[in-house]
View 1 (tube, helix red, strand yellow):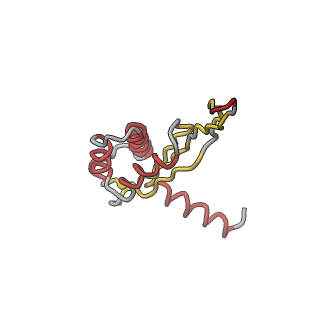
View 2 (view 1 turned 90 degrees about the horizontal axis):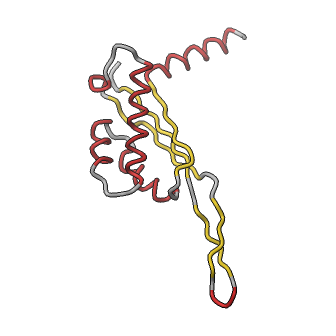
View 3 (view 1 turned 45 degrees about the vertical axis):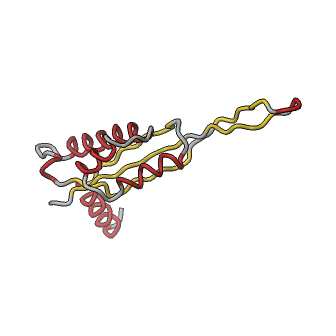
Length: 132
């Protein structure tokens, strides 16, 4: 590896030390419903985001709460000896993408059938510490 690529790789590695990522795959809710809940916590402090998700009435909020707890645990595992409460973690990025959907047939009048699409999604969340 050349010197320039080596320096860029080490800089990327240093930047990723304060970041923790968590993924949730094949969640059986539609991406639109998940995005509505994800928009509520994007850019928020972690403790405030957990409060929003815990008291939300949306079905998707339970899955996102568990994912956020996983991202916090990933950050604590990466930064041994530091607590997430003192670091001031923030939800820097949350992304909801469409996953594979099931296609089912729904009975319709006069012997016909309508196609029913059962959608699912993938969610990625990134938390970052605001304090160094």
